Image (tube, rainbow, N blue to C red; front, side):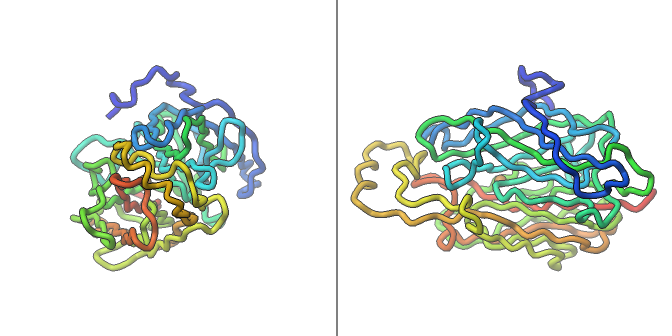
Length: 349
Ligand SMILES: [Cu+2]
């Protein structure tokens, strides 16, 4: 696994180009801190090349060490600092912080690193401390080594420089009464992500469900504090299941803010199609394309109750790609995902 991340980027700083200080919101008595880290610039290819998807892997320093992360939020911006989203043709397809210092507990077959912090374009605010109401978070030790794997997508005609940002809030110590939350990654692609988490759209189907099957048989006992989800455009609902029963329904909402709408009449959308230049004339026959709402949020559940060793946990995602326009142009639909990322406070051993 490590091999695929070997790059010429500095292993100590990676793509980290800037850190800004922000005002912390939780646990002021514990001298909490909040920073915005910026990674880049990442050159996202123009629409029409490699399905307009930029793939990036780079080492990233931990936001803090000997600390507890209590909340995080991913975002993207352009190199000039301006907001980047669907309204200007750029998407945070997804970004994940992998921790090479810990193993993914849901995959026993290989030494997959833990998938620790993650987001898609929905940019969910992940509050591990439940907005400061619970003494919980992700504690980072010296042995934790982070890499970022990210996919950024563009429907612009030219390559664009994009910066991934993460807003981190943390306590700069590990208080003894704080619980470490273990991330557990459930994917419709199965526990070891044989397809890298991405599932091709089933042929000739417009409404379908992708499901993690078989479920993961838990090796962990504790309390499930947060369940966060990720899916692609076209998704209607993601469900986290415990022993076949719904433990969390993650509602997928579209276009709730102007940034999450692709404007119609794009001269360039649908690039990355089958490549035949002969298709191009057809598009300019005066058909006005409607605005396209994109996934703008997936709801999160908190305090889901217990997880016992031997419980079966899985995830399902319903898609309807007629109701919600999926990613990808004519002739090529982007694969879909169904992810539930649980954060579990393990019982003391
Ligand atoms: Cu994704």
